[in-house]
Length: 365
Image (cartoon, rainbow, N blue to C red):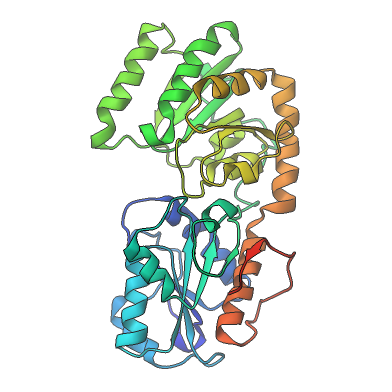
């Protein structure tokens, strides 16, 4: 994809090949930022070819300032990306302003704290993550693409025949203990026999180190005689239609950084029951769009799911969920607020920087 570094004011490094929550964020956010007029390029592996990107060989071009600003923003989301920015700015003296987005909900290591202390600006993806930061920061919650994730407006002719006419309850994401897949399966084994109109679907990658974990879940399901009603879909090519097919989505993670799947489900018009890991509790309106329970608390999770296995209640919560996401978690809102941070770091107005609703803050950037 042709581009001129003269017009680029933001570099978004991505130094990881495997899919992660950060990857999902970059894939959704960068096209919206570009659509709004921001000169932005990604750098690194593991991203789809349609994203605007620069090659490693173009790095020397960052010595030259862009036309519209005195420097560029290097927007890091991982330790190695912060370190690379430090080397480029402090060792090679490139005109860069370093910004770090933190999603971690734990105390940072001494090394990470040192890296963060060298940043020109810091963003937290939610209030809980921000509480672990020792530096001034701004809270900017992730948004979701409301065009890509939307309620179904027509009959789904691609739904497998044996799932048609069923109410589906789903759990998506990597199949592993951290994600709480076992809690979901346990709840389904207990609840589905008394709710014959429901079928559970599980989608996500099973990596080699978690194969035994997944096999144990399948064995438990078979022992309960529910293999036809608790279905493993594997890693599907396009998860978006599956969100629309659900009546209820469950996010039972034991720990999480931010976690986009509840937002994607709610944007698709689906009610959500989630743990309080990540930013889930900041997304869901209790009793209105779904429910939040303590992470790792099986009984509370099971009971919350049971409450929403009344189809009319779940569907009403799903409609409210879409309205809530439209009002508070649109991707455009996240892009606008980041544009304000970029403009503040560069000391100049970026082309698409617009006033947005006042965000939660702690300190300043």
